[in-house]
Length: 125
Image (spheres, rainbow, N blue to C red):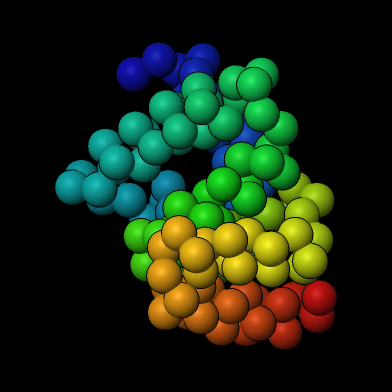
C-alpha cells in the first residue's frame, strides 16, 4: 500500500463524506473487508478524487448519475450528502436525476429522486 496516497485519500474522503462515516467504515473493517477499505481510500479517494481535471462538485454530480444508473441507493444516499458538502444545489441534483431518467431509465431516476427527498428532509435542506 502507498501510505502517502492512502493518507491523502483518507483526508479527502473525510472532507467529502464526513469523519464519522469514514472513521466508522475503517474501524468496522475486518480481515475480510479491510483490503477493500484500503483500496477504495487509496485509489478512489487518494488518486482519482484528487486529480486536477474536475472539481469535487463535478465529481459528486457524476457520482450521483452513475449511482443512479447502477441502482445503488446506499451509496447514493452517502454521495448525496457528499454532493451537498461539495457545493451542489438541490436544483443541480434534480437536473442530474432528470438527465439520468433519459439515459438510465425513469424507474432508476424515480428511485434517486425518492432517496434524495429523504436525505434532504433528514438534513433540513
